[in-house]
Image (cartoon, rainbow, N blue to C red; front, side):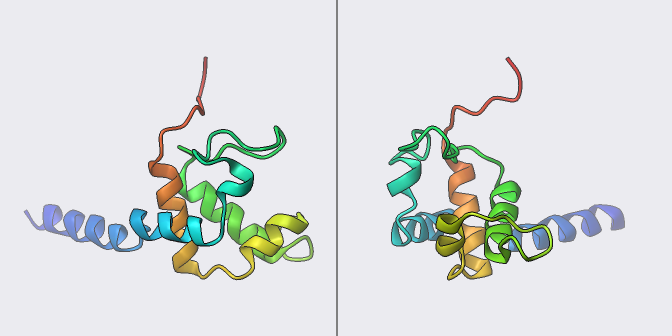
Length: 112
């Protein structure tokens, strides 16, 4: 029984760090993410831009933080557009946007 309570406490505490889907939707609209990644986040305006709908939330969080770091930061990403878009995001906004995008239906597949 003690192990069950410990597991539930851990699960609940991990959920406290999960992003808020509704807040993420508002943040994605505020920062106009759809202007490049498409209104459904599954049909970007350029084929070189990634599809974000249904992507894993932890991957999106990692990518946005890497864009904030830039090329000179450890494990950073160099892209002038995304660097500029990611810089003003707070950790909470990143988490929320990631949760929102992960909640959307997407065309990403693991294997065919």
